[in-house]
Length: 260
Image (cartoon, rainbow, N blue to C red; front, side):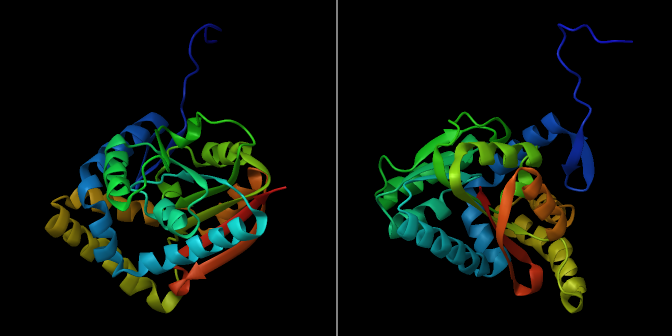
C-alpha cells in the first residue's frame, strides 16, 4: 500500500541507544532525559570516572584548535554537544577574541554551562543554543572550526550531524571530534571492559545517585563505531581526514578533518 503523498514520511530507522536499537526520536528523547538527570554532577563525574585524564585529552584538542586560530586567524567556532562549556571556556581563555557558539540538545546542561560562564566572567561569549545537532539552526559556510568532545556517540543521527557540520563550515574549515573507542589494545581490553561495566556504574550510583544513566554511557561507548568505521562516516560527509590520534592505547581518539 502506498502512503498518501501528503502524509508525513514513516521513519523506520533504528539506532543504538546503549545496547538496544530504538527509533531516532526515542534515542533523542532518552538522551535529553539522561543528560538532564546527570547535568548537575556531569563535570565531577567526568573527573572521577577518568581519574582526570579527560582533561589532558581535551587540553590537547584545545591546543590544536588554538594553533589553528593563531595561524589562520579564524574567528567563529561551533561547539557541538558543548554541554557545560569546558572546551569552549578553555579556548576562550587562550583566544578570547574569537566568537563561540555552543550547541547542546539538553537545556539543563546549558543552564549549568551558563552558570559556569558567569562565574568565569564570560558574559556575551559564548552564545548558547539548545537544539538538535541533526537539525542545525545555523547558516551554511559560517564557521571556521567545529568541535565535538565526547558527544558524537550520543547524537541520534550521526551521519546527518556530520553533514550539517560540513555545511556550516567555511571552505577550508576544520572539524575536531574527540570520542571514546569500543576497542583498545588487546592486553588492556579485559580490565578496561571490567572497569567500564562494573566500576563506573557503581561510581555513578555513589556520586551521582544514578546508576542507570552511567550504565547507558558505558554501553554507548561499547556500541560506538570502531575508528576505521567512524573515519568512513566522516569521509562520507565529504570531509578530508587530516589527522587521527589515539590516546592510552585507543581508549579515545581525536579525529581532525577539513572541508576542502
